Length: 490
RNA sequence: GAGUUCGUAGCUCAGUCGGUAGAGCAUUUGACUUUUAAUCAAAGGGUCGCGGGUUCGAAUCCCACCGAGCUCACCA
Image 1 (tube, rainbow, N blue to C red):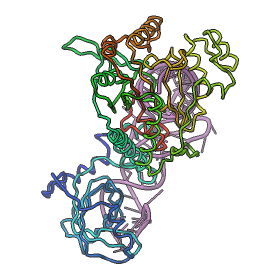
Image 2: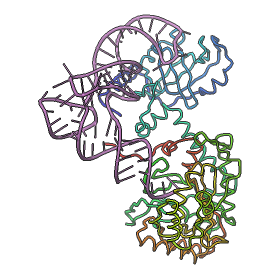
Image 3: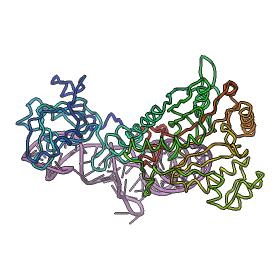
Image 4: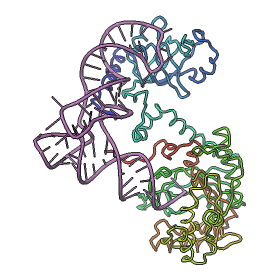
């Protein structure tokens, strides 16, 4: 924490003053490196120890270690680390003086020739040494680094300076988003942006954040999902659209949940949920190959091969497989609850058959789904936006995608019959009146859109953060989000 | 939201039974040097998360609060 009285800051302020009194600006406007550390390591990998070259380079980065009274300075740039050798016979006196004012943590720039020291370290023998941003804060101790979990998230910039693994995870996350975007663009999807301020909450079952627009004197919801707006675009003739953007849900925070998270949704006209299953398989393979180089990820000790076909099985069959009970045989809520109880699942609080199915699945099945699995054909009464199943009226054409025991996405054959959509919404409204504050609201304009004719459409959604966790091996969602939501300190 | 563990120097951590607060790195000063967590000598650095209480005396025991970790609940 910034502390006016701390000795490190004072000593650094004194050095800053010394530099400025000598007419030196330690916060220059521009400094252009000619190369990066990793490039040099690659280019000179065969240079023998003790050999000097005449190749002049300029490097810029953060001073991570200063040894031998400044004779050796480790410089870290975006690509890696390289050592500068600041020797009085090579470096001008003025620069030697400047070196006395350098601290670990300063941004520095060094020009010189490339050599490998007798000890074998690739080095830039400095002919010019600049401080390009004087740091006033000490870096954490170099051996242990910054390990305090709270401090790492609160001062993420320090975490990224010190911990290469943290930096690598975030970098991969950004590459994942980029690869997802490329995949959809390759398949002729148009990237669109839809509102984040919603007058009516819709598209998912979740608790919202509520805000207020002053000029309109109107409460607005931060979006929990972009689904309804994207479908309106399909009605408007945008056959293939996708959106990558933030969703907000006013719920708990844990390893798998951050109040704001990045959702991907895509809609494809003239397709159904089977097409969406193919699309998700292809998407995951593509992203894994683009970012990791191969379609394989590690889940703990277990390797998962994404190039194999993903399992597709109905939720009812899966429950039967894992527990032996067949919930299709339950004709009433009470019968379903009774069957759940017989395998030790308390579904007493469930208000409908589908919720019992969901409860049994969550308790008995979810944690077993390590290999990629599409859990198909969800109960109709818990999925108000999906088409009724073409061969079973109790189900809908909706699947959830599981990988590494996490729900990473879902897809539907989108409900396109405006009259049925209205009935489904009305059931949600009734549930809401019975105290279910996550039930959806009736969106008249969305129904009006459907009344204009909504082509058969497949839609899918996926959590970018969770995909990032699986592809990077991050154990918590906070590691794939640069600035996760934290409590205010003080 | 519930349970549980934790919070000591800039960082990583010790601190015994309640008896004047410790180390390493970092900082300052000096020495030395083609070093790899450089080394050597010396010095400075603390509201023990915050506020109460018990006690002759609290980093230590008790209570409340703040923040964090883990587990659970809700959820993607």
